[in-house]
Figure 1 (tube, rainbow, N blue to C red):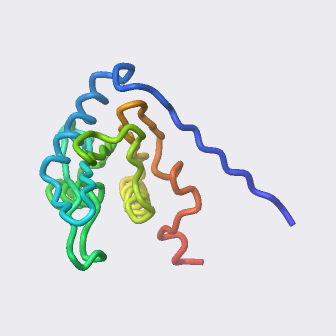
Figure 2 (figure 1 turned 30 degrees about the vertical axis):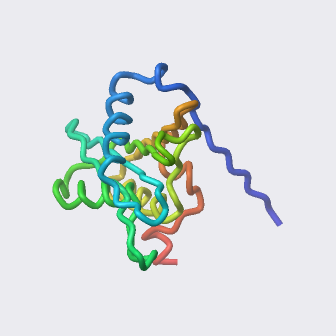
Amino acid sequence: MESLSLTTKILVYTFDEGTENIKKLINEAKLATKNAYAPYSGFHVGAAVLLSGGEIISGNNQENAAYPSGLCAERVAIFASNSQKPDTAIEAIAIAGFHDGDFTDLPCCPCGSCRQVMIEVENRFEKSVRVIMYGKSKIYEVESAKDLLPLSFGKESLSE
């Protein structure tokens, strides 16, 4: 029997410590929370993706009374960017959550489905996607979506 050990490096910093580009991307994610459709959970999530050409495309969560029919902000933003700019890689994604009249104190982290979609984008463009998770008290940042889902399912899994 062998043992595997997984380690994830997560940068932790405050908004003021972020670069101007990161602040801009986070602000776009925060702005996107305002257009979220979240009448059931009341939890508004915004996401903003930075494309390799510098363009930012945002999205927000879209709920539905039949819960599985909704879609998370991260996937809305990613699918919008893939739809509008299919040949342009995503360099980074910022995520922000808004609930009970304020942004969340702790970082807003993506669900498993969104992590899987981010990894598909990384595999598609053969390029890591930085994931920036905003919280008022601190921000988490990882260099790659694979840091958040290290044992992911990909096209190589289909050939085994």
